Length: 99
Image (cartoon, rainbow, N blue to C red):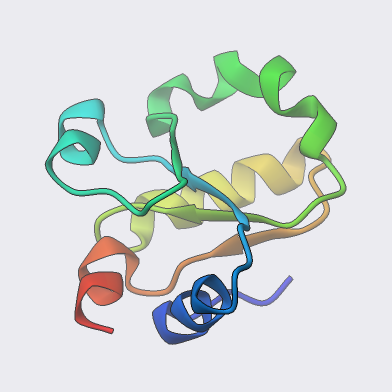
C-alpha cells in the first residue's frame, strides 16, 4: 500500500474521517505531542500487541513516528504479520506538524 502524506491525512481528518493511526514513538514522545485519535504503541512493544490489533488486519492502518524511520519498520513488520493495508506517514510527526 502506498504511504500517506501529512497533507493527505490532515485533509481526510478535516473531512471528518477517523483513520486508525498508530504512533510507534515512545510513550514520553507521545505525551509531548500527538495526533488526535491516535493510539500509542511503541515500536518495541508492537510484537506483543498483535493480538489486540488482529481485528484490524484488513483495515487501513496509518503508522507514524517522529521522522518516518521507526514507522517504516512498523509498516514492514505489520505487513509481514499479514496486515494488508498499512501506510506510513511520510516525514512523521515533524512533517505533520508543519503541514
